Image (tube, rainbow, N blue to C red):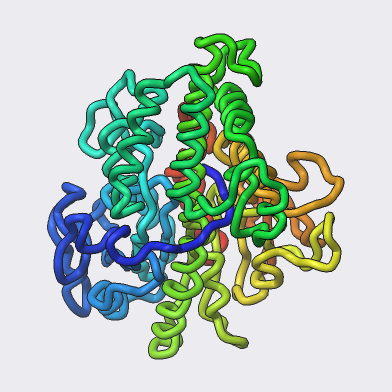
Length: 485
């Protein structure tokens, strides 16, 4: 949901490898319920069968440190294709949800590409966790296997999310049990919130910093200790509860005041407390997405391009997966022209990422400054105003992380690329989706595409953040890669 700095921190036990109950040789098993491994031309593939015509397909699996599963890498290397679609899922996915996403998103492609294009389909699987109380349109009918939490959990942790947090923070069962109990009981005392904040800071790895201690906070590296974990926990929960209210989720009742004199007001802030726990989880996953992209996916693609120089790569990423594929560009060598397009779907990172100079700090550039020039084609940033995760929580968490300084307004300084597109890149065009599909997209450079006409459905608190499975967006990928009929 949000994009706040953190550390990778987790090894193999926390990811989608053997501890998650996946197959031994490939890290892939039958848990998705979508069939057994599908055969690929040129060798046996790894991964379930997808929609008719979506073949060859394989899943490329990475652990939290960016190490690739060699068996899955081999399956991708054996693909007989002219063009590979490489799609990285976002932060709110388990492996089965990621496979369902790929199944739905890839389905239109066979009928869209030209006769000379032979597609290979690659689903990147990396260890991100799922908060089961957040709906994903089209994938999560109530009561379905792997779907939403049962109604009524509200501010408490449902069992699926509790298990996912245990995999994210192995060995912290006692702390997580206490966090879950506090969220369920919702005590109406300030002491309970102080205890909750201390537990979350410990899980996030910032427990050495005392809340409200400006000296300790100033001494710590700003990117290492976001202010969301060092400010007064009651105020943080109050701000997050109000943000939930904006997004249509559980919020603080009117009149929630600093002194917490009314029990109802205090209990209402536990919605904000649950959001603080989410922030601690995503604090880890933002950094992890960059690590998987730069140290994992990028080198794997560079190695494959080295032995198969005619193969064309089209990178697609959703949410934090957009960060994965973007950071993979750091591994493209000078002169490498094998990445032919990049499509970012509701990207959960800064809209200034590709900028040479930040508007509020002219001495600095974005984290991905200039990397669009490593792509032999366009970098499309699809955005939607209906995305509450990026429109409400991303700027809030970024502001509270103290990621930058300056005098710009709230939305301008802290915006996500999936909310309002690429910013501060001179000459980067801004297109509506209909115009982009009708007239085509530029042949190179950053391009913002307003996809709000189709990316518009979803419930609280994320809004339309995951509403990305539309033929129009598949057609946009085809246009960006010059693969059309």
